[in-house]
Every structure is written in C-alpha cells, then in structure tokens.
Length: 369
Image 1 (cartoon, rainbow, N blue to C red):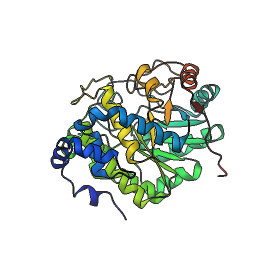
Image 2: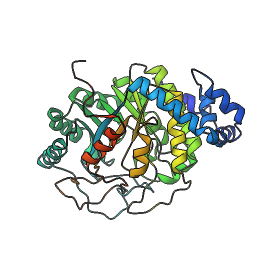
Image 3: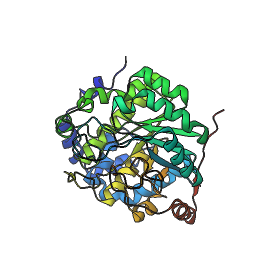
C-alpha cells in the first residue's frame, strides 16, 4: 500500500520552518515569474518575504482562478448529524471530556433538517459527526447517506477516519467527497492536542487519504486547524501531502479548507494568531501552486473577509451554517462545535456574490457525467 508516511518521515519540522523563514525577496520574485511552481516556490510565497508582493499575488490568483473556474462560487451547507465523540481534543466543543448534552439525529430528524436546507436552494451537503465509532460508525453513516441521497446531487462527509472497505461502502451509497483534516502536522504538538481516543494515532490519520484514494473517492479535502501551530510550516506540510496525493491518485479532485481556531465551549487560545492579510496570502499561494485546487471558505470567517475573498481565489462557500446537531430545525439550542462568524442568511450571501459579478452555483454536475 502506498503511504504518505514514507514521504513525511523524510522531513523535519524545524528544518522546514527555518527554510520558509529564510526565504528572500529574490526567491519570491523567482516564484512569481514562473509558469509552474514547485513546493520550494510555495515556501517562498507563504514566507514573510512575500508580504510586500501580496497585491501581485492576489491579481495572479484572481486570473488563474477565473481561467479554471470562471466567475463562479460553489455553494454548500454543513449538516451536523451528531456531537457524540470518543476523542479528547483540546480545541473542540465536542471533546469527550466536555460535559455537554449529546445528540445524534434520528431518521425523522435528519429528514426534517434536510428539508429545511433544501428549501434554501442547496444541492451540495456536507454531513458532519463527531468521532464515535459505536454511535455514528459506518452503519449509521451509510443509512444517513441513503436518506439524504434523493435530495442532493453532491454529498460530502466529515467524520472519523475509516478503513478502505468502509469508504467503499459510503461511495457505493452516494458519497462523492470526504474531508479529513490532519489538524497539525507537528507530531509532538499533535499528541498534546489529542491525548486520548483513536484520533491520538497520528499516523493512522495521516494515511487516511491513501485509504480514500485506494477506495476510489471522487474528491478529497485536506487542511489544518490554523492556530494550533505555526501556520506557514503546517501549510507547507499540507501542500506536500497534496502534492503526493495528486501524483498517486491523479484521478481524484482535491480541496483545501482554512479553518482558523474559533471560540468554543472549552476555549483553547490559538498558539499562533493569523491575521486576515496572512490568510489572503496563504489562499493566493495555494492558487499559484495549483490552479485546479478547490479552495473553500467557511462561515468561521467574518462577513467582510468573505466578501473580499470572492475575487481572490476562493471557489467554494458555505452560508447560514449551524455547527450543532439539529441546529436548523430540530434542536436549535444544542451545543455548537465552534462559534461561526458570518451568520448572514443564504439569500444575503448569494446577493453579495452576485454584486461582485460572480454566479453562486448550487449544482455543478450531473451524476451521469
């Protein structure tokens, strides 16, 4: 079995970090002058040395995104099925040690939530659960996907890492995309943030995308939780992972998300703050590295930031998100995984996208393609 671990183990975190922070203006200019950029160029583009070139990066990112995706923003909405979780994670409201009421949606409740989000026009749904094998394992998920399949043309899931045969079961019933975030590629700090539960196994999580690729998934998503560690170094490792996956599982499509640590019940303070300008820099750097890549911006970000990022490289937006199970209709007061920042109604976000000359896309493909 092919494994990203074999590549990952050749890199040292501190060496990578030093390499990024010692990039020069010359390295940045060199990266910007190329047609095709390497991972070394990506280091330059995410380095402090690239900050004076942000305007140029943004213009190039805008052009490349428009060339590949046109003037469109793909719309999706998350649907939280359960907040049950067996893991202890320092940054998450669903963490096993948090004394919160646990909730897992029944079939009837799933349909109620689905009908609400469908009434808003969505045709892409992201099903989310905590990581609890017994409560929301493969049987529960397979059933949930069968229930929602008739309503949506694209189903994504963000659940615990699984085995290849379990992914094949989900693909068979209609899952198109699986998102799995490493949270951080810093191995020692990963252990600090995930002291207990299956998630504490760093390498099992690291090889999840290999199992997905072998299962034949249509699209997979990667990312880190920005704020746990140095964002530049973590982003390089994400790009390294992406680069490896695109070579081995070249038939699959890929997306990157940029979740910044948000307030939650339990309240971990970010170790490293990333400002809006730096997030724009990172988004543009990814676009300059890979013009096929989908870049997703969630409601964790503010209205203002999301309005401004439409033209700069983003391709996928959520809106009106609830991060608690039953949050739309069934149980609006249940505990959220994290606080969202942009809580505008879907229609308002749609209007803002249109005002910028872009088209919100609710459905981007047919099953027969």
